[in-house]
Each structure stands twice: as C-alpha cells, then as structure tokens.
Amino acid sequence: MSHFPTTVLAIAGGLLRATTFAQSPADWPAPREVDRARAAAVGIRVVTGKHLRLYTDVAASPAVDELPRVFDAAVPQWAVYFPVPPERIGNWQVQGFLIRDRAKFAALGLLPARNVNFINGFALGNELWLDEQPSDYYRRHLLLHEGTHSFMLSFLGAAGPGWYMEGMAELLGTHRWQDQQLELRVLPSNREEVPMWGRIKLIREAVAAGKQLSLGNVLAISNREALAVEAYAWCWALSKFLDSHPSYGEKFRKLIPQVKQPDFNERFRKLFHKEWSDLEFEWQAFLAALDYGYDTERMAIEHTFGNKDATSIAVDRGWQQTSWFLQKGHTYKITAAGRYQIADDGEPWPCEPGGITLRYHDGHPLGVLLGTLRSQKNPGVFAKPIALGRQAIITPAEDAVLYLRVNDSPAELSDNRGKLAVRVEPVLSGD
Image 1 (cartoon, rainbow, N blue to C red):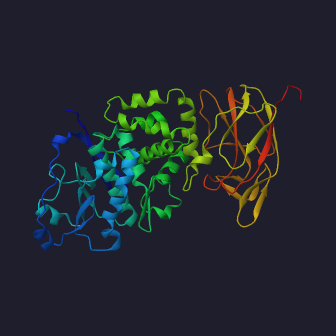
Image 2 (cartoon, one colour):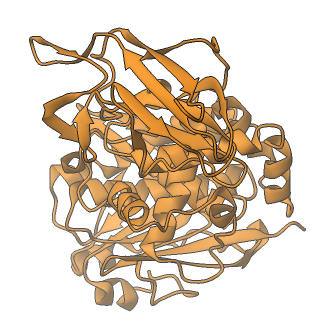
Image 3 (cartoon, one colour):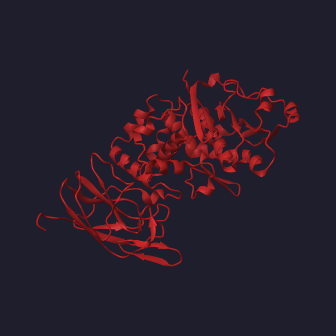
C-alpha cells in the first residue's frame, strides 16, 4: 500500500511550522460524528456548503459564514488545475472546525486525537482544523491552504516533497475573493489586499540581506521538521515563478502526476535539464525584482541573441539578452540613445537612457538603462545592477554575456512605450 505525507501546519507569533508523518488512506479515520445538540449547547454552530461542513464557535459574521461558499468555489478550480474529472468531485466533502475556544471542542472529542496540540491549523484525511484568525483574508488563506492538502491527498494520493506540497498549498491558497467570486493563484497587487500574508516582504528582506536561495536550496526544503514562515515564502515563490512563467508553466504542471514518486525532485531536475542554467538565472532575476503586482509575462526573459552591431531594448519588458559576450579583463564602452515613454499618469513621461531623477525605483532613476553580466560563475547580480545610463565603461571580472533593461517597477511596465538603441565597443589600449 502506498504511503504519503499528511501535513500539520502551524502559524503562531509570525512562525509557520509543518510537521509531516506517514499516512495512508486506510489510516485515515472517518470524519467524526458530531452531536449537534451538545455542540449547540456549548455555543458551537454549523455552517454548511456542498463541499465543506464547518463547525465553529466563532460568532456569526458574513466573513465567517461565507467560508463554505469560498471552499465550494475552490473545489472545481482545484479539479481543473490538478486535473481531476468533474464527476469525481461531485460528492466530496470535508468536515472542518474553526476554533476560538479549544476547551469546548476538546470536551466534545472534536480535536484531532493524533495532534490535539496543533498550532493554528491541521489537516487529516477529509477533516481539517483551523484556529480563528484576526484577518478575514488570512482565515480564508489558511482554509484554502489546508483544503489544497486535503484535495491533493484525496484525489492524487500524495502531494509530493515538502517544497512542492507547501508550494502548491500556498499557490492555491493565495487568492482574491470579491463579489462572491474566487480567484486562485493570484499575485497580490498590494499588501493591503492580503493582510498577515507577508510572503513577498520576507523574500525582499532576504534578497536585500544577500540571503536569497538557489533552486537547489528550495528543492531541499522538507516539511518533515518544523518550518519557519520564511520556508513557506520560498515554497510559494518558486511555485508561483514556475507556474506563471510563459515558457516554464506548462512543463511545471506536467509534474502533477509524479507526486507519488519518491524521486520527484530528480524527475523535476530531469524535466528542466536542458534549460536549468536559464532557469536558475531567471529565478535570481525574479527574486531580485519580486514585488506586489509583479508582471510575470513582461518580466520573463527571452534568451535570444540580437544584432551584434546594435541592440534595440524594449522599455516595457524586464531583462533582455544581448549578443555581446564580454571577455574577462577587457574594457568596453556602452552607449545608449533614444527617447521613450516610461510612465503615464494621465500625461506621458518622456525619458532618455539617463533616466528621470524626479522619481527613483530601487535606488536608481526611473527609466535609466541598467545592465548585468551573466557568467558561468555568476548567474547575474540582479539585486545590484550596473547603472549604465547614456554611456558607461565596464571591465568584466569574468567572461560574461550582457543583459539590459530600463529601470522600472515590475508592476508598472504596461504603460511604457518605445525602445532605445545600445552599442558596445571594445576600448583598445591607447584609446
């Protein structure tokens, strides 16, 4: 009989922890019978939807009482993503407990026997438990996160290694709920949209401190031990990066049928073997620029060589590969020219390669030409790019390919218009 992990999730005091232990479907207890009269006597009520029956002692409110509708809206989206035929999900139902006072649930035997001291959230089979949260958004996020685990284990029979299991739960838990419509897999447009979530903030802090993780570091994340909330941020970031990338997304989703395989990570590496170097390069670029509203389509890097005499750089995209391979220890002069639009707030903002000093982004003038060097030893110093402007002299420390972009927020590329021309010339001794 195949075995797979069941996850204990915990969020407390800024710490999200997961403990994993082996479970098989046969080991799951049936959802417990709840004596509704006794529950009601201690202030536990039930709100029910098609796919979620939720017992709670939290006072009635629109945000709490609509949770079964949120869950019902998620189930068909999970089924499409993984994918699971619609006829298989028709009668699937999870029993959940949203808890403010644990003593009430303990007295009725409604806490999970195998983990009565869970912190904030726990899922086992088709039952899940949630501690009440101070944020309506994060209460829904926790429900959807746990629900994703339950769905994957119920219909796929497993959820993959730690980084993938938690990455999927975070990817499909990060949502937008508006006008009774649920959107999953969102990249939030601002922090106010997702109070208490904080994943982007954690990534940005790590990058600023020079502590960003490589692809291999993230793949090594296991939920067999307690995880800090930072680990969940990395799992989400890698899953979001791969899932939303125009070149990698379809291939990434081919991993879904592999979740039962013990060599899942090896299969992942084999699947992306041909583009692994580009993948690592783009991952570092993604981390360095990640922010609310990040435009994954426009920020994706196209690895194509251009005209070696002159390169045209689009101002509405992220990093762009040039045809110039710069040799170690040689000196080069880079010149740029052109006039383009870098913003539009009702009036277009004209710009040239030197940028606009009225406004800065990440420490550089808006619209200034930036460069980074990709060598075998260094996948690109994206957190500290070279400000090239109209003209610059550079001497690479390693043989490297030059990549260019104009400086702008990854959430504000859509109102940029135009291109600029760039030339690179070797500086000969005596020049």
